[in-house]
Length: 325
Image 1: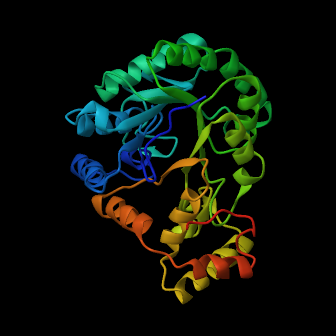
Image 2 (image 1 turned 90 degrees about the vertical axis):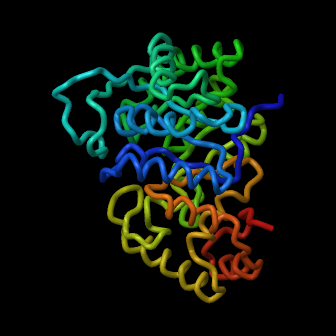
């Protein structure tokens, strides 16, 4: 079966546009999206959680004047936003978002309502893909499988119906863990997964089971978190927490190999993520026009084959890992 894939190889992740960790101005958000467009990026990922609707507002405002057939957009379900004028200005890591509170609801009705609300915030007639957001252990703890079951019995059914009706083109999960993706492939018919931080120069957890499973089913992957929340961009955090010494040391070894070949580590990080055939798109975030433009430049930068050979020789990437040609 031929399935829809987002246009790649590079997209724009919308979490920073929702004021993740620090506010950005409306002008900066507009400039970042404009830079993405001018760089040839045509896939934009967002979610109600990102700034409690702020990311959707900003992306929709910037894109709604563009020809709708020239770009693709994904959003997410699983959290409904309830208006609350007393909502804190900082929630879930987002600073100065809109006056809503998010609550989990993976039911069929909630998924339909969530899509409708997202379209209103975006100001667009449709979205291309809808992802069930975070039905996984890192969000829900030891009882996460109960929430996953709710999602499969509820949101997955609604999204399958919307796909069959032509309202959306694809659905899947947006998660930070591999296991719920594998379970979804067993229990439903998802088209794609956005998985953050599980396939990178530092970690290839998605490669062992998920990539072959997706290839067998014709599903595709969108790779989020290609810099592992900053560690591969020169920072010191991994999965949004201080990186342990062994990962810092491994990152430094990767950086040394990249330096020896005259290649920015960020370019290697982005292009490594995009190399497997099952990967449709890589979606780093961007807080400014400069960041977004630099990501596009790094993705297009020529990288000598000798870099990948050296990383393999140093045991820094698996021998079987797919690398750019």
